[in-house]
Length: 506
Image (cartoon, rainbow, N blue to C red; front, side, top):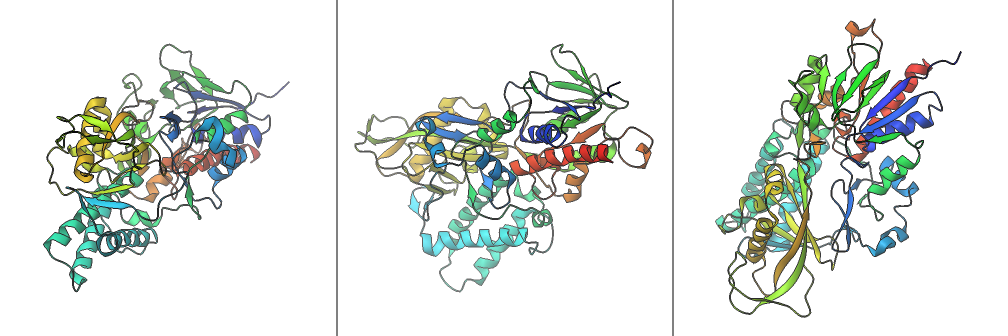
């Protein structure tokens, strides 16, 4: 008689779920029956490479945060996505293919260029130094990151012996607000006052430079899928209810798809989906939620509630230089625009907002910069986080373009002016499969909550006599030191696969 193989169902075909499946199918040999169920119609999750205006762009994950020892960098290398030829596939240049420029154009609202050496550079050095101290555990105290940064600016201004004055301090405060917007997009926190300062001391990147992937981030997940047996990934199966109180675990899906049973489930849904699932019973889950039967235990619910999960969106714009043939107002109307010949390159623009131009919409004031995706590109990019990112998803294209024009006309008032001909943007807040972008440790939470996120169910002494490891949890929000990154997602998937491998070896 042939022994029945343990069936493992992995929920989610992002990098976390695929990493778990590849590990089980590889290191586990033929020991497991593995299926990956994906609610959408593609693999990758929050990794999505696309094309816009002849450029290769990333709608989701963009950076490999450190290359020394990074499993994602190794995967990209093994997939051939880092080779020089990858940049030329399809004739597409790619985001940040030239890194970042040594010098940027920093402008205050209204068009005044900020002195780089005397004003802009010292404030950037202050911001970077303070965040490096926080991540080295040297910040001292607790509370939120924003107040920590503002205390640093006040101390800097108080210690300055000369060169101050109300005008300079106003610009310095606008520059710090610009860097706060940068930190919001780095962390996904809507308000840096809600980003826990102490937890910054636990966060780690891998050593080495941060890079983008010439062949596109999606090549990484395609490489993982290629390592799986054909048919392992099944699409269009949105999990609606998970019955985990007994063995086997039962998975129920939307739209009348037949249920599945499993000995073990590795759940890789986003923290946003888990937050939407709280308070839902087996019959009341909303379209974005998963109903747990029985409900998640208090330790898991409390960790889900305390941790932060934000939204970050990218706005890509195709821009062209134009010369007005008659005066034009800052809203972009009233003048006839003619193409400038030849058009100069769009600058790498850092923007210090001071609240002086009423035509600039509030949501544009949440971005740090508008910059070409690489030197000489006609595609510009702005990042948004939190409430501005969510609001951006609700606007018609024409409203977005008008808002960008008003901003550019304030910060770059000299001719030629810049016209946006079309846009493309991500929409992670309203995507029901994610409901946001990535996690952060909020004030009132801690790294211990990330560890609790990784705890399998059932758990603890009360589960001693029950079949173990019915539901395992993976994803970027379950990794204590690398949360919010693709390598956290990958490592967590491998971790949960190894947990099962160790269980059966034991």
